[in-house]
Length: 187
Length: 185
Image (cartoon, rainbow over all chains, first blue to last red):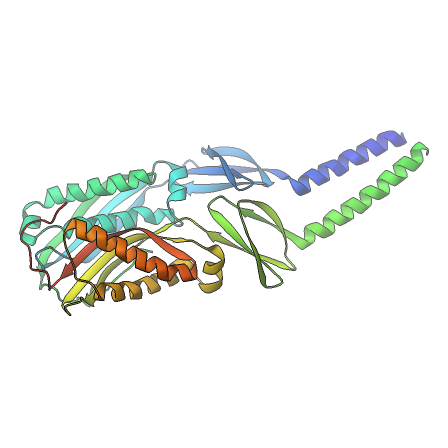
């Protein structure tokens, strides 16, 4: 009897020690618009799909990635064209996460990646053209911005769904610093 | 030694183990560091070491672990007005990836590493651009971007930050004759 009691007691102590050092099993449910990456002792083990998964709390952790569409909309941006005139443009678009793991590693605040990419691509493309070319080839330029952004976003695990230049005007006097359009950052 | 003695010893040892685990567990917290993070550990207020990926128990009475995200953060600085080397009004915009290079320096010198670095970059960029002449050709832009990134990194390195993949997205100066055709793509 005493030996049986000792065995049970040691078994109980073993469970307590495992729970202390390894952690306890818990369950986590990922919604249909979420994906995740399971980490064990700090290292990525596997990607996790929506559903219920078991996690050893203490040594494992799931980083959840929201894969819902990211809407992007910017209005009244100013850009100086190659001929020195200033153009005002607005754009809207949307992007989604295609590869949760790559998107997770792409940036600290990875949902901002499509925003910054579209901002920089649109400015970069528009700055290469003169005002008369832009007026004539608005659709082509829209396509060029879209292609440039698509390539950059795909490399980071995103997919560009839509992009549209909603406003484009070349009516501001050249090289006048515009107080209404202050310098901004994409952080 | 009889079976009753073994049981008594095992029971007492178990109680001791349980009590020590409870006391130790109450004094420590779990810190989980993923492979894109680092933990800067301070013991009694003094920097001890930088923790790599893993799951750690930290003594919350004596230790403090600050988790630093090492992933890059894309940033865009737009419409920075300055005067170039000819004192001509000019404008520059850049896009870059900002990341933590040295977690200890970034933690101890900057409250918010990304946001605080942006102010530093904006000022440095204006200073660097002021000493140069704007060239709108694509090749000149690439060279300028490399030069700007190198200059920014030498300053940012002091506070544990760095920039990478810097791209000049907009550049114009009154000193450059206006063009009517598209620049090199």
